[in-house]
Length: 355
Image (cartoon, rainbow, N blue to C red; front, side, top):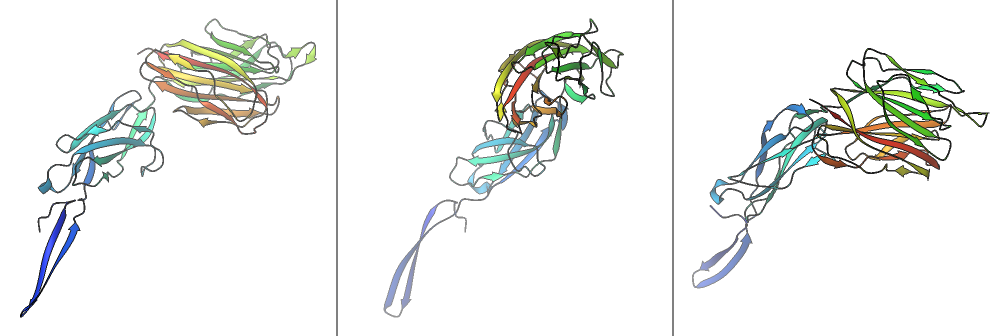
């Protein structure tokens, strides 16, 4: 009948039989018309974190009532059917001739695009596009690789060798982490290592960390590892090597460390700001109890690894996040699954990678 959507109409009817007449009216409002939102021009299909990933949405209604007006919001989901919480969401983009385009800069992972149309005209209903195929985002400049075997030391010793993870290649960023339950200061047997930080807590716990670009070596040696306090047997220590790939000429650009005493549940390490591009922020954490470390709020951090050690009883964890541009980042909120009073020692460090 050519009626306009979302418009009230009145129909007049008259029934007549010989000299009898009976008029009546009927009023009805036509519904808004359905629209279809499709997503296309996804580019690129894969790329490194920090790159701009772009998609275009086309909104189609009934051409007889003009081009749909309104905005489109674009989202990136980690799930294949675009359910759950979106990892990244664009600002609302205005339609121009029925189309809108947005760009997002996701961190490393696999994502799927979806576009949501919100009408501002009088004729059209909202619509949502189908979930797109995957795009793959590689974490350029700082792909977490692996951790080597934990070296647990249960008695006093002078020198300890800690093995690298298998597959560590020359040039990789290597972190050496020592959680010492007696807070004794140690050294690394190589001038190639640089200090990250040395943190001492109150409950006979200390976190020491060093970094270097890997050479041809396959292990690190810690010197002067003293885990005896006041001539009494110490509770031990654990050492751990962590490797990051694709960080050409790594450089430590910022760091923060600290302690939290008698913490239960969650702890958020101190705020770290970095203004260096192509930066990987790494959070190292240790506890003085055999905790079940996890992250209650990742804030787009990736949980690299976490482990508990029975002898001595303590836990170590590492998480990371890649920042492609000048940014401020907040370290992850760590969670203690055992929920017992625990002291945390932590270091958050930012490393940049030169092209």
